[in-house]
Image (cartoon, rainbow, N blue to C red; front, top):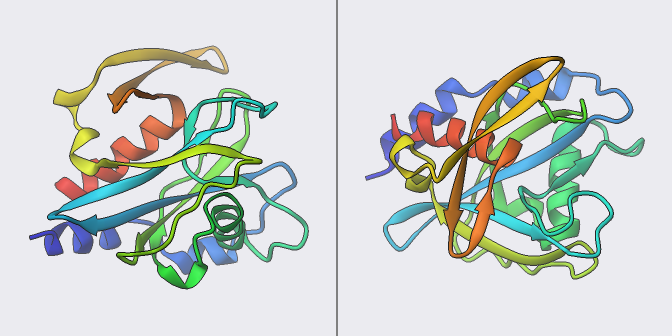
Amino acid sequence: MFNAGWGRLTRQLHSIETLRQYQPQAGEAAVLIGLIERAGTVEVILTERAAHMLQHPSEVAFPGGKFEPGDTDLIVTALREAHEETHLSPDRAALLGALPARYTRAGVRVSAVVAQIAPGAALIPDPAELSAIFTAPITLFQPDQVARFDTIERQGVGYQIPAYRHQGYDIWGLTALLATEVASVFLG
């Protein structure tokens, strides 16, 4: 049922090799958009950051973080951060490609690596960073499911970003934008 979506997504993403060749600068970040097929649907893996975090406390996000000097590329960053936050073993993530880099409101350049996560992959939140790991169906991130639009300003330009509600979680900002982009391609 989802074969067309996986193929469409893989064809339209930037290649993993392109992202491997990119030389990140200090301060850049990467996230892992993990998609898992189970119970007849494709779900997006999301996290809720711990309330005690200094940056973005209690916000919904993809696993990810800043590029570190020991990382060879942003793919390594995304996989390392996902492992640190959720204990996802990198060998359980089949890399599909990457979205074009986006910037946060604070001006941080973020690369999003998209991967198909093996069914049954163990995901355990690291309490030092997360309060929860949850999934949302990819079908949530469609125009008819938008709970509201937020206006985000960057360099004097206002952008309308969709926001969603799922199981009591508020999914907004860059996370919602990236999830919407993946869903749009996957669902065609």
